[in-house]
Image (cartoon, rainbow, N blue to C red; front, side):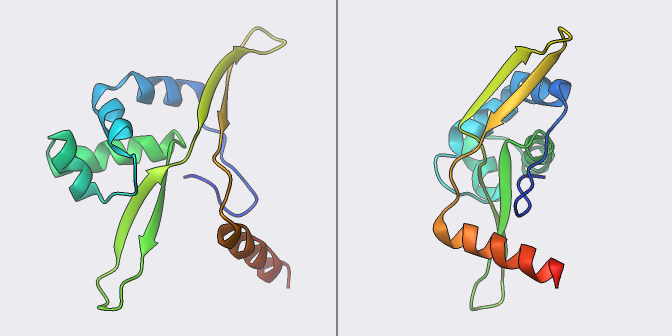
Length: 124
């Protein structure tokens, strides 16, 4: 539920708050210093794989991690996860309602080109 081309999701404030308050989610975020599979995350965070899957889904719903498929020549592709934020800021808007803003890391040039190409293909 992270970025899709030029569009970014805007998760619900409560979803982000609940996710950041979850101790297992916090552990998984700490372990995402590099791209990892759910199995790798489960091992380093010392949680069952089923729990790691549920928490990764929760982190995706909060737009804090990004999933991508690692294509392998042997045909055994795998899903890997990486952080999809640099900063999360909560503030009050003009109506005194709580809002959340998520600052994203810059896209790599090849990611920007792929996004641009996807957008062009959608329009033709």
